Length: 385
Image (cartoon, rainbow, N blue to C red; front, side):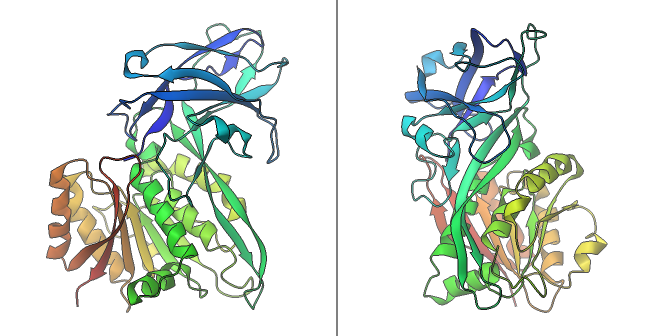
């Protein structure tokens, strides 16, 4: 289980370039149904919203010590020192003062063994500072989080490494309660697991098979189900950057969800496309109760199907199972199916039985514990026979 910093009362869109703005910070689970019950020091800083990868960021200041007794308290935050009319700044909240000395203090390191041990930081959208119109300004309706992962760019043909660094993926979420417009625990947990598989190829046959399905140097065709904001597809596209030669066949990564998820999904793909050197994920509408789109049928087979937190609605299990089976039968070789799952209700575990009834067997292969409570479980599915 992970905990997330967010805004119960977010910053305004417009603010006067003097005095304070009022916010109400919150620490809760991914769906904001459970509040953090401990005591957590919170720190804030301001980052100027300017083009470029190294924006001016103020030194961190302690905001408060958040406790259950103060969970709904509005807290004043001083505007950036020296802010001028017409400037835009983002507010960063973290639970770790040392994070503010890094290039991306608002970041979540997917390559860390301790991912999720402390509440995930958050960054507001830009606050535009202008005395005119600041009074009565609307509150922001979006937030951003940054996720770090190793970024490799290989040579043209022989695999010689040219550069090695860190990609800073930035994803926008809505502050509303729309389930397809926010990050879920399993998206982060499974993305972190992908990094581990890429960086530490195992010696046993299963690990080699998984590594081949996801990170072989030959082009791969992958599809994400129930994408939400799209973190799985973008993570895989970045991790595969440089694996295939610049000339020749390219990877194909399709990320799917319902129509209401498309605008934000496409925005997040576009925001991170500069890291996707082998291919940029393609978004498609895929309704589990309808036939597969022609563009997906035309793929002629998949190497991997990935999905995270798709089993929270037990009534959708038959449709999900049928969709998986149709996708698995597109080609002569069955794809590797990878599921990130966190239990929210015991009834969700009937999914394994529903899948088995159509010939898909799942086996648990790993966990991402986070801050305690229900972990993110990693399950591998295979087509029987």
